[in-house]
Length: 122
Ligand code: SF4
Image (tube, rainbow, N blue to C red; front, side, top):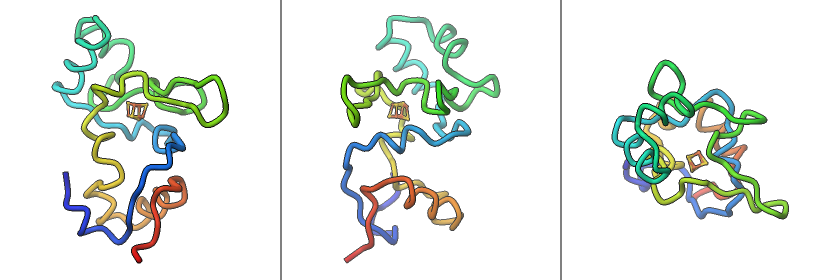
C-alpha cells in the first residue's frame, strides 16, 4: 500500500459503503484476489471469474445499481456490507490510498466527494 503520509487528506472509515458503489468496475482484482474469494465462497476460481469478474479479467463486475457485485444490503439503511470482507481484494484494503489518485486529480476529487471518511488534513 502507498504511504498514507503522501496523500493530501486524512481518512477514518465512516462505513458509508460509498467506496463500494463507484460505477465502472474500478475494483481491480488479480489472480490472488480471485483465488482467495473462490476459497472463501467454496467455488472454483474459474466459477468466480465467470460470475463476478469482467471478461477483461482484472476487475469485478458491477452489481445492481452499479454497486460492487459483492456489496450486500443490510436490514436497515446504512448497513450495506461486503459479503467477502475477510478476503476482499487488495484494492479494497488499500482504499483510499490509491497511487493513481495522486496522479489523477479528477479521480481524487471524485473519491473525496463520495467518501465521507476522507477529510482535509488538519
Ligand atoms: S469487494 Fe467488498 S470491499 Fe471491495 S468494493 Fe466490493 S463490496 Fe466493497
